[in-house]
Structures are given as C-alpha cells and as structure tokens.
Amino acid sequence: MLRLILEDFDAKKIAESGQCFRMTCQDDHTVQVIAFGNVLTIYERGENVWDFSCTQKEFDTVWKEYFDLDTDYSGYRGLCLPEDAFLKEALEAGMGIRILRQDPWEMLVSFIISQRKSIPAIRTAVELLCTRFGTPFEYENQTYYAFPTPERIAALSEQELRDCGLGYRAPYVLHAASVFLDTPSLQEYTLSLDELRTALMRIHGVGIKVAECVALFGYHHIEAFPVDVWIQRVVQNIYSGTFPAEYQSAAGILQQYLFCYARERKLKEQ
Image 1 (cartoon, rainbow, N blue to C red):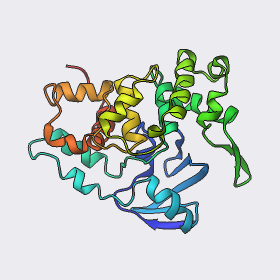
Image 2: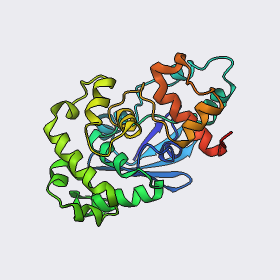
Image 3: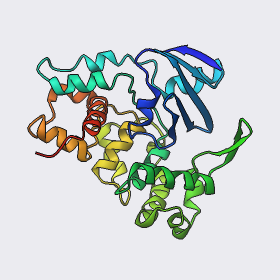
Image 4: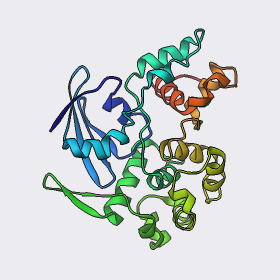
C-alpha cells in the first residue's frame, strides 16, 4: 500500500465523471480502476490523503501518468473569465477532477458502445466484452480481465458482439478494429486534433461527439470539446449558444467541470 498526499485529486469525482467505464466506486471512500492490465484500489483516508494499492514503482510507471498528476490544473482553472459565475461555481464544485490518460483503443470502443446507452448500461456492456474476450490476470486472488485487443475484436463475429449487449453498434466495433489496425497513426499520438477527427470519423458509427470523446479521453487532446445533452444545455443557457473563445485551448478540461456540475444540478433546457 502506498500512501500519497495529493491535492487537486478526487478519485470518486473522477470515477463518476463519465470519462471512464472501468473505474467504479466501491463505497463513498473507495474506488477501483482496471487499466493497462492492472487493477488499482484507491482509499480516501482524509483530506488530500490517499492510499493506493500499488508499489511506488507501479505508481510511477502507470498511475502517475494515468491520472495526469504531473499537470497543474490550477492553470486551466485560471482561464475562467471574471464574469463567468457559472464556470467559477463548476470549478469549485469539481475540484479534484482530472482528465485521465486512457488507452485510445479502449476509448474508441467504449464511446462507440456509449451511444444511446446509460452509464450503467455502458459499464455492463464493456465488462461483458472484457470478461468474454479479454486476457485474464490475477489480482489479490481474484481474476480480472484486460480490455480486448483490436486483434481479438477483429476475429469475432457480429453476433458474438451483439451477445455482449452491443446491439446495432456491433458492426461499428468490428469496423473500428479493422480501421485501427490498418491505420498506424491511430496507434500513435502524432495527429493534430483535426487530423484525428478526420481519421476517427472514417469509422462507421463514429460521429463528431464520439470523435471528440476519443480525442479528449484517449489521445489527451485537451482542446477537444465533446457535446452531450448537458453541455448543449450549458452552451445554450449559459453562453448564449457559443462557448467562449478564451477557453478553447483547454475546452475539454473545462467541459468536464461543466458537464459534472450541470448534471449534478440537473440543468434544465430553457
């Protein structure tokens, strides 16, 4: 067990922020995440005090980057315009949220699956996909499953994917595997946001919203700006239809604070 003092980090808020479907709250003070063939349990022990169920070496090589802990998020919050009361409230409420540095392939499949599904339904489908087709590994005498590789997915039938609850999204995931394997640039981090959008939207079933989610949560393009129903309401109700240009350089990070705050407040359409 590794005890860490981490300011501007809140595992529960991150787990509930809709950017990761294999990070779950076990209770109010315990979060578990499965990523990159590892399992991590995080325990909240007090203000800014966290226990990580890993070694210092594993933290340094896996989780420090995964949670983007080398980045000072106060700089992004400093972009808030003095007159923007709503964003200021969202930033205060969302202290501790961070944009995870996740596997692009996992994000691509997860957000294709996410279309017209609730977060619990997405989690269920993703876990079933992993349990049936992911590589098993042991952690604390339990068996867990890594996210299936694109090679493994490409070898499946459409029906096998439908049996995991993917429905009409099954052929999209098969096509995603084919395109991902045939496009080396998607396996790297070299594309600009515009180039990445173009490459992703060649995949059947990937529209602008899914492409922006994958760009932000998989490739860490923090200027990507996913728009769901909550962000659409924020942009319309708070910003009169146009997100401020002053925020564009970190639009994705600010979007995450706004998304969580709007959902928490159940911001209504006007």
